[in-house]
Image (cartoon, rainbow, N blue to C red; front, side, top):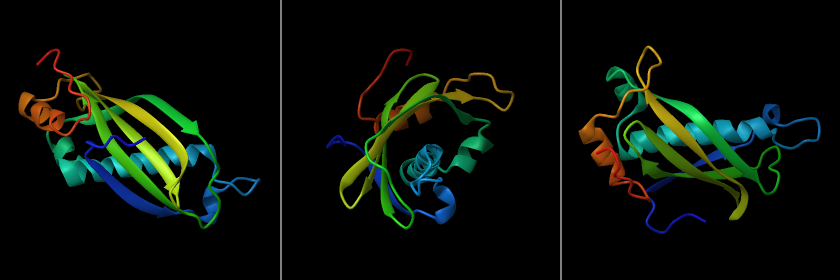
Amino acid sequence: MIPEDATTITMQHRVGFHETDAMGIVHHSNYLKYCENARVVWLETHDKSYPDWIDLGLHFAVTKVDLDYKQPAKFDDVLDVTVWLEWVRGASLAMAYAICREGTLLCSGRTEHASINDDGNVRRLPKEDRQRLVQRAVTEYTRGD
């Protein structure tokens, strides 16, 4: 599931009681939060911190989410959330995720993001930043370089 050549980070998350629903399982909306946290850590670990991007006047707005739920997580489970960069384009990028418990895949997914400025308008990633990110991406995408 995780590409061998992917530049990843894996962070652990212990499920809190408040994250579960009336059936005692993690509410589906929380998986996206786990992905979001891991994405921010990936940027900090492999590129630059999110506040550094904000200082450049750039934000990564979510434009698409696709999560595939395989098995439920429950209160007090320790989850491994792995994330990697799939591709980078002129003003967008995609991240992929695998959420596991003790090696068992519970949820996989991906998010796509548009690079926007402080006014919410789409803005191309600066060429040097885009080129640096492309080196970490699983799929090279060069249109618009």
